[in-house]
Image 1 (spheres, helix red, strand yellow):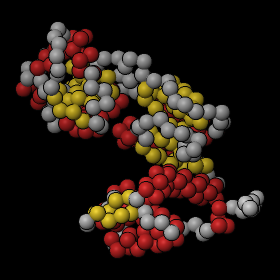
Image 2 (image 1 turned 90 degrees about the vertical axis):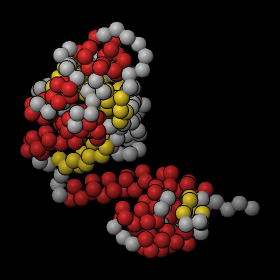
Image 3 (image 1 turned 90 degrees about the horizontal axis):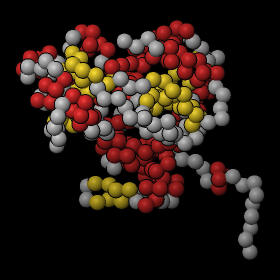
Image 4 (image 1 turned 180 degrees about the vertical axis):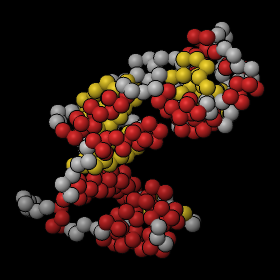
Length: 306
């Protein structure tokens, strides 16, 4: 006979593990190393080991298996680790919102492209804070679309096509690429015209590997591969370009300081993005006054770009 207890919650069947144990396991699972988890959390390796062991005891499951001196996730560990990081982030957000409410403030959760945040958005945030002191900002770096509602994100800055399931998108701005190089590289390779850049070392953005080919199509004849260093972050490409390691195709908004200081010189306009632009994404079907204030503010800031 099957007994059904209609109102019995999961928490009534077993006690939830401690937050410290869950954080220790999440870090150890991500690194598959107790030592690296301990370094991240600022505790000893023994403390991480004890927290994981306590969690295994509480759940009655083996979360790791030993392979020599290394640890690997068990199937149960993989199942737990797959969702736990997001669960902890959502819990942190819930607590942060409660604290903000207790301080008579509104917490606005914003997901933003990492280099965009560091080099363009954050230097302008003092203006937003001065205009809206009752809004506290929670910034996280995200590069790809995700479930805004599930992750309790109020607004995200997205580059790409206007495609994001479960989100309403507001156009922000196009991406204006320019071909730039450091003065020393320009002198070393006698760069006087756009086509001359193709004789110099080139810096390639890994996620958009054909930008230089499109630049060549617009400014010179030729075919075949264009060799050069590849990097997966605009921040690294900017640093490499300033160091004279190669010419780069970069968005104007990321190199405002370098252009003003002369660390990088603009040689030519870059290729236009094919159907891609920047957008503000928010959960579909929601109305958030704080997100609306931020959206209107950032649109005004973009209109003042150099």
